[in-house]
Amino acid sequence: MKPERTARLAGRWARLYTRGLPAAVGERRIEEIEVDLQDQIAFERAGGTGDRRIALSILSRMARGLAADASWRGQHARASTTYRLGAGVAIGSAFFIVWLMGAVGIIGVEGDPADLMFFGVFAVGILGAVIARFRPPGAPRALGMARTMLAMATAQGLVGVVALIAGKHQAAISSVFEILGLTGMFAALFLGSAWLFWQAARKRI
Image: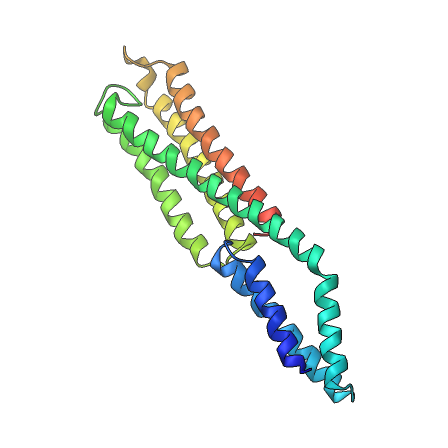
């Protein structure tokens, strides 16, 4: 019994229980396992351990780790779902803002130039998302997206403040309550997205 064969068996098992997860997460897990098994084989052979005993050791280790592997799979599957939900909330909120701007206007009447401030919020989100994409997959990227959503929520709040300073609440069609209510609602949605991304990072996707 060759230890390389049992190592390949362990690798196939890793590919099986990582199936359906984000590619970067699964590939990282498989690579970690394969490198660890190669190191084990080299170390035990250097110590004079026979191939049969090494192979049995790998099989025993794989059997003992089945429960942990299943737990790891469940944890990362939940984290991936949370990450996608955070992205869905952010994208849905952005589309809702654009639709309101085109349909009835958010600040003042339809077509009011003040609505262009919302494109600044989008710019913050796009820039943050691009920066987050350059971070390692998993928790670092999710944390980057959480910070981006926090920045968007802050920018969204500033839109409302600037609109009030500019006197947009004095228009017949607007009021302080309407401006703060709408901008506050969108800020809350982006904060909710940030919370989901943060939860995904905590679960180590």
